[in-house]
Image 1: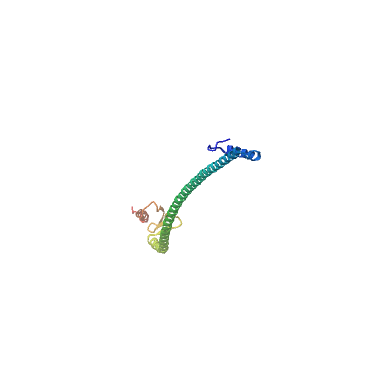
Image 2: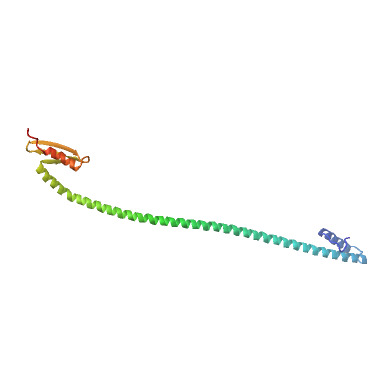
Length: 206
């Protein structure tokens, strides 16, 4: 038997309960000793049950605290991870907004330059057209002046040779004809005039 004031394990409690069952089944349950023993054993069982219940309750509290702590830690970790992710996304958004701003400013600057170049091209085209128109108006006048000059000086120009001042000079006094083929790009106007004038001079008398 187990003393009434000692702390017993759950296995010992089960043994006591089995002994109680045997006592109730026996023929000696009317004895005073057995009655006292039964009372003690019942108290031991009750005490053991209360201790077990208290121990289980404590274990449940500990487990509940551990679960709560684990849940809180998990929530903190999730919150930290979420905050970190949101911070990364926020930085990425700021970076993209800055890139969009730069692209917008660059596009605007390019458009301004395009408009400026269009205006310059338009002005140059107008100037070229005006110059071409002036040239077209000047050509007949120049040809007429050259024709008059040729009739006076006896010079006839050959306009078929591009880039060349070609033709011939008739000298009535000597009845001579002198041909000329001058590269206008390599001679100044003064040099060309001197060459032509030299051809027009009559030969010196001997």
